[in-house]
Image (tube, rainbow, N blue to C red; front, side):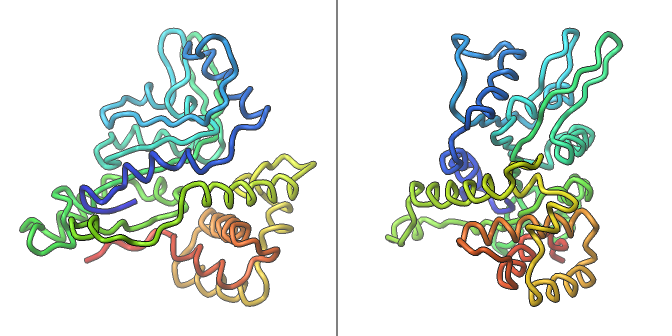
Length: 289
């Protein structure tokens, strides 16, 4: 999420666990095992809530991925089956952020030390938030600094392209004014959104029964082709976009997974052009001049 200060990015991130489906028995066991190793399991009981971890941007690489003399899981593993929220993304050390590339791709993190080599689970939903530039007001001529737009280019360049390529949804969050808060606007309650998400997750559970995948995000190879390939119109649009947007192989497969999820949320059995178009709209856009 990219937007000015006070737009509600952190609030949106903190609300995400509330619309996710509850942990099933297997997921609860995995989360509790990680917490047990980390020494954070309360009362020795299985946890039933999805983790939400929000480390400060001063966190070290060991704090994020795990380490120490007696190797313990880091934040990316403590958020396993939950949400890892990185606020003020460009303020994290670049090496620290790049250490997340392998966990995001593989769903595990390997910590190598002289006295131990340990692999922890790290299947997380990464949510990141950042201002468009250091002053945070790039789109407001009255508040933006005199260095715009170079200020924005320098600030956004702190985050590497390969890491951004692993983030499926890039959303601009508009500023919220005091007038917006005073106006009564129609809204959808979290319970309704959670019900739709749960229904989509149940579809995926049935779809991938008997395979190694649990959700669309896990689908690979023949499973991905069998269940996430769009219809003819969707394939034509995706082929055009892949060339125009210079999609990498990773970006191409991630668009397929996102489009399949959008179709699931809409209750559609097939992935159509409209679902592909929405998935493409979330891909990373070039920085604004």
